Length: 182
Image (cartoon, rainbow, N blue to C red; front, side, top):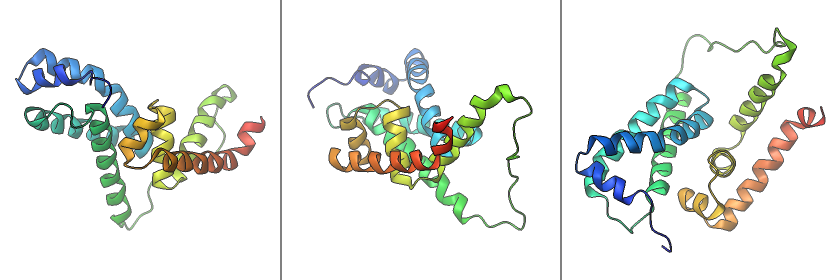
């Protein structure tokens, strides 16, 4: 690895049980974890649960963390994605007698909320992508990871990541063609 991991010193302090370090790592990582989980799951409450579980894993892993083996942020994104996939698999396995409540697809009561409507459409289109394409889009466009780091998180080559991004972008462009034309 060419550059030093900016989280190593903080993680060492977390491993020592330093309460200030714990607060600092939560402040530093929580917004990105919540954003990643929210985009992958489409549910704020589940995103909070995933973030909590990810922080539990940080605290358990901190004493055993070996600097230089992997970048902490890459490991944390992978843990968060795995937790999201666990929840997505459980969703598919749950059979119920009643269909889930649906969001009213009708127009917003106030036309000024058009941006929110577009955001909902984008979120739905993102949710309809195959898992790996959605993961690539979320990591690069929403989590703002570079292609090299996103590829490392996903465990694929940069070329494979770029292929996933290309297919995902084309699918989103098709799904949102009428939004783009507005």
